[in-house]
Image (cartoon, rainbow, N blue to C red; front, side):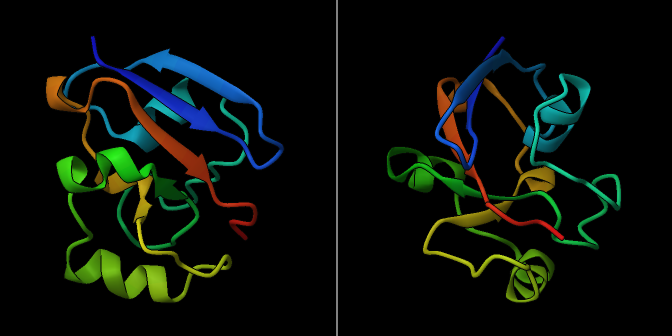
Length: 107
């Protein structure tokens, strides 16, 4: 199972095993990670699962698609260079060790 580390706005970290195919958002919600609101349940319709992908994984994970890009423009926390919606990042072996920082405000 690939591992994903969530860095909370207070700097604390939680590392979890993720199932292949589950999104970074699903993994967080299933495991009670604070800060991922996920109001739309992963439909890319709310921008309440905003994260910043660590620089070393930005190329591996890739950038947002068109709809996700539009949603990020309306996120409560201003987007950054490696902003993504965690519902749109599906975990796989290539993403093992992924580190994401949860945006400080989601709603």
